Image (cartoon, rainbow, N blue to C red):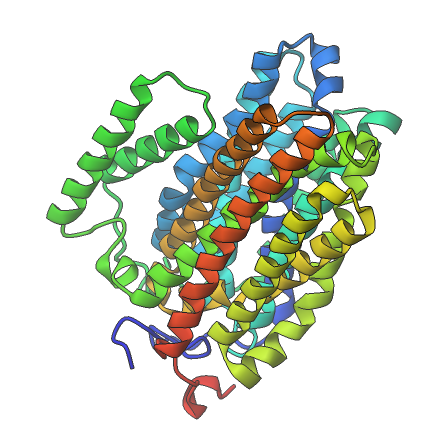
Length: 480
């Protein structure tokens, strides 16, 4: 077996995860992923209403969106390390309480500045929720339950991204945009009670636990957070050019500090494992493709297919439904053909769907596009073993920082997908003649970039499966 790898069903750190009551852990982690993903997707359709109510310019609205994303991406790895140090349960409970408070602040904000600041607070709370929720699936679930847990978590993310625009449009039209934020408060409080009552207090970060010796250094965590913040701002095109210097300088400080310190934030026990690197890279490429696709599809749906904004939002609901349908299939397939082959199959389906969209773009075929989007959603559900394999490749005491690193990579990749796929779409559409043909040409070019990214991810998963960097779980590893 590859020394950097571990099976998707084995236990890397030799810990004995709790097999009892997996449902509460899955529900809590799934909600953590759902509410953080929903918070951005639900907001997009309501931005014009928010701008009119608070008298915000385009720049003001941009900061309402970007302030959340910048803080979220900048703090993910640090928040994961906090979970390793103090325990994922404790940090998750703090994150849920903080998300409820900041959601209440957003829902009662009286100005654009106040809303942007509360949104930044939401981003910080979300950074506490996502890696710790994902880490709980690694540390609190028995190996045989993890594939389904990760699949449910991914389905929650996909559902949030797909139903967010439709739900946001309905709330802003029939109720008030403030309910977009206020509605999260009771949900967070209910989940907080569920987590406090059902999640075990032990695990990483408890006295004598696997993560009790995890240490955080001010220089390392600050340099990494600044670098992540700067890179995210550059990808979103929301900062001055001097951020290039800031990003490079902070990255160099972080790398030098990591090489010299006895307690690195990203130890070689995490980033030195081949399965971790391959899995994280494949997920990042998938994120580039899907985020880019979701970014360039609304203009095509509205200006080529003639849909309304509300209709455009509803067009993405089948993606969520396809993910939900595909989720129960994951665990049986993993047991039959292995994690990497299932992930490779999922990436292949996504690639086929995107290449088919490229061919259909100039035909304005709504039914064909809907079928392709559903296929991409089903394939995305089958890619969830990537996350399982990545988390199972590290010891329990590094589960939080590993989850944070994977999520941060996916967030940066998503921003890169918006930049790469979006710019390809814009340049091609501007260079083409005719309307809406120019939009269709740009859409095809942008989706082609997304399809090529998924194709590379498929090749990575294929090589990983052929290289046998995972192994079949032993009887001891899966015994309840």
